[in-house]
Image (cartoon, rainbow, N blue to C red; front, side):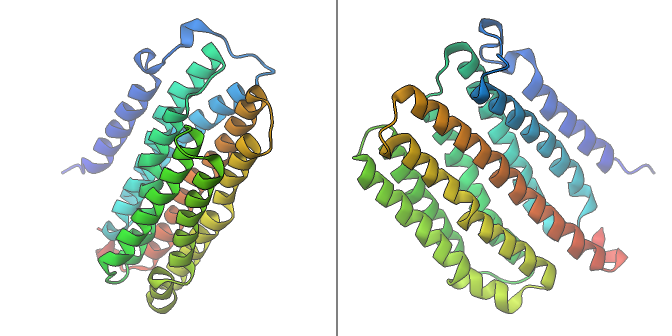
Length: 269
């Protein structure tokens, strides 16, 4: 009997990509054209297509890894899928109006950033039992970080006070994955491939995520004009997203494939 799983995976991935690329998903394609000198618009187009390609890749690769890694790859695909959908809207809105409301960016982050944090919990859970406290500390730190950032960018709090709150949430996450329980479980229980992936992921959070507060400082705290701040913020945030969201998934995929190849054939089914 023919195995239908690969066919269904291809079919599902194809339907997802078709929905993303269909005319109905384009917010303002008919109202403006991308200019070659529009660095923000070009960055939106590049990352939106990169996110679509990454989504297809992660979903298709699910069939290649052992069952215990499938959830992690599914989450990676969901992160890039959600981000791609939001980027299509932000991209076309920018081309049509030269504006990207803060709320679009934070709706994206409110979904994708907690999912990225969940990945730390998932890859550890694939190899050992992990206390629920690890999950909740990562989630709480994430929402504190995002809440502070949004309050400052949307004008609900003083930009410096909001910046301090957001940085506090980020620092809490960094502490948990480097020195907290999550970091200790990785050091004591994880095999080499998982330790390597976990280490790379936490450096993405420490170094890659530093781009976001840098963008916030350049956009809101250095006294630039509103137009220049809008351009700078979007370019910085777009570059950060393409690195942090796609790189996270690639790191997890690498660990999943490496660990799967070490398993006996019977364990891979």
